[in-house]
Amino acid sequence: MNKGTVDIVTLGCSKNLVDSEQLMRQFDALGYKVRHDAENPDGEIVIINTCGFIGDAKEESINTILQFADLRKQNKIGKLFVMGCLSERYVKELSSEIPEVDKFYGKFNYNNILTDLGQEYRADLRLERTLTTPNHYAYIKISEGCNRTCSYCAIPIITGKHRSRPMEDIENEVKGLVSKGVKEFQLIAQDLSYYGQDRYKKLKLAELTERLSDIPGVEWLRLHYAYPAHFPYDVLKVMRERNNVCKYLDIALQHVSDNMLKQMRRNITKDQTYQLIERIRTEVPGIHLRTTLLLGHPGETEADVEELKEFVRKARFERLGAFAFSNEEGTFAYKTYKDDVPEEIKHRRVDEIMSIQQSISAEINQAKIGKTLKVMIDRVEDKYFVGRTEFDSPEVDPEVLIPISKKGVVKGQFYQTKIVDATDFDLYGI
Image (tube, rainbow, N blue to C red; front, side, top):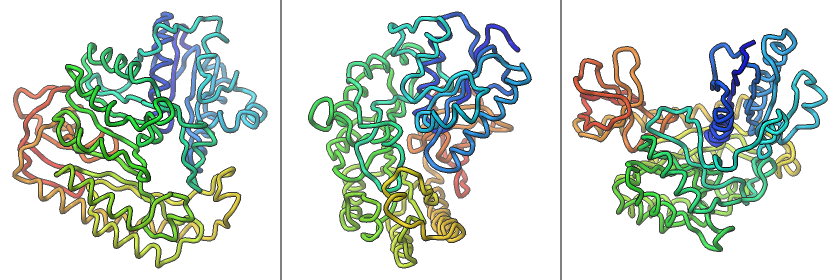
């Protein structure tokens, strides 16, 4: 056991990562040595930040807790705490089933870990974080919760209603990070589209994006997790006119057939979805769109899947992911529908969609050969500097590989890079 050390393990999405980083800053201020996702955690305090979104994520979280519970029994670690979405949702069940955990906390009360340790939460540090990402980029969470009622989604059960953060807080957080060398910001939320409606009584994503882009030192702003219904179209003008707002939008569409959109309770139609994509591409020429699709929802037919395949071929998304329906307890789908699509068919449909997308991605990448693009260098790996264009978000999107022999390239800096080759999912530059 490593005295004076806190190990934090983060599972799930970038929104969880932000929570971990905020907690890490509090422990830093108390004089602890704080490690994140260490290879061999052996801290005096270990904190697991869990995900509880779908079955696979819950299983990973539970397995991780059990692994650390075993270390706790062997006295290889000190106190063991669990926080995040899984324990927000199942705190009573987990507390009784895994007694080796000293205490379970939810998604929003994790600062109580400090007070339960006899320490004081530093409110003056609430906008500060200890970054776990490379020093040049950070995630900025602009809201919590979600007001949507999608049939399959457990997130509103876990996080509650949408709560927009004050614009001033977000601006001050970004300014603080810029002062520490951060150049690139990913704006994240469960639902970017709704930002401002609860706090300011109108949609404010465009104004927020504009205000953040005005901050000196912000070189890239990228928007993640927009919702298609009641989309804030005024943000497109900001994206088109501001050079430091990336021509990139992550907007989860989930499906396109009217049958599925209705059963999923998405509050949008097939025609409206096509119109949305066309308007976004018209108003922001060159934009790269990322979306996710859900296959195997109850009631999905082969005809629905064929409609979706046609949509993928026509829309030609630059970035696309697909996942299989998970029947989550407490959701509308769980209470209302029969989970009637066999698992093997769900996964076959996912594979079929991704096969179509692979060809599209390859064609889009091939079209970039010969172009010169602005690239941010993230790391060095094997024989390459590895970076991204404005069209690529960290962790999830294609990367640009530049031979390590190229002179003058430094991590955390931008370079004009000529693309000389491409694979299905990556680019090669000089």
